Image 1 (cartoon, helix red, strand yellow):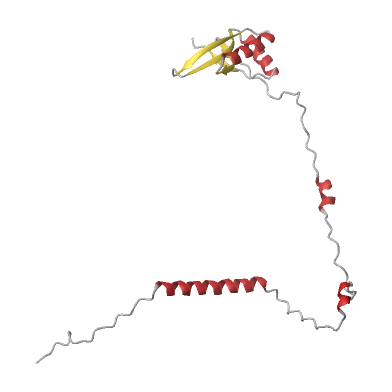
Image 2: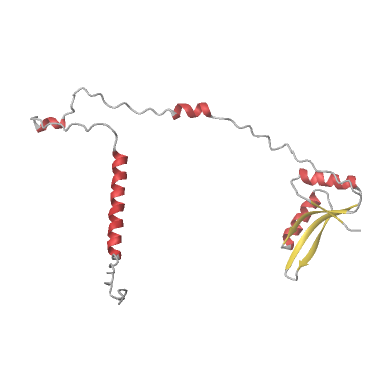
Length: 188
C-alpha cells in the first residue's frame, strides 16, 4: 500500500528578518570606513615620513634666541600682478556725445500724420511737454483719452502734417532736441 509522504515532511524553518537598526549600523560603519579611506588618500603625499627630532640638552633660555642652523629664511613673496596690471590696461575710446548716429528715416507715403511726443497720466505733465513744444516753435495739442472706462491718459500731439517734407523736418528737429516722437497716420 502506498503512503502519502507529502504531509509528513518536516516544516521548513523560517529565518527571522534582520532588524532595521542593524542595517543602519552596518551602513554607518561602511560609510565611515570609506570616508577614512578618502581622508588617507587626500593626505598622502608620497614622501617618506620626516624623522622626529631628538631631544637636545640645550638650555631653555636658548630657545628664545633665533636658531642659526644654516636654514635660510623663506623668500619674501613676489607679487607680479602689480607690474603686470599696468601693462595690460586697455584704453577704450569713448565716442563724443555730440554725434548723433541715428538718422530719422523719412516718411515717403503720402497722407495725414501726427507726431505723438508723449502720453501722461496727469494733465500737468502733458501741459509741461506742450509748453516745451511751444518753445521749439511747434504747435501741439493735448488729447485726453479714457481707456476701458478706468484709466485716463493725456496725449501730446504735434500736427497734423499733410506735407511729407514738413513732417520729416519736424521729426529731425525733435530728435536733435532729444525728444522721441511716434509717427501716427490718420486713417482716411
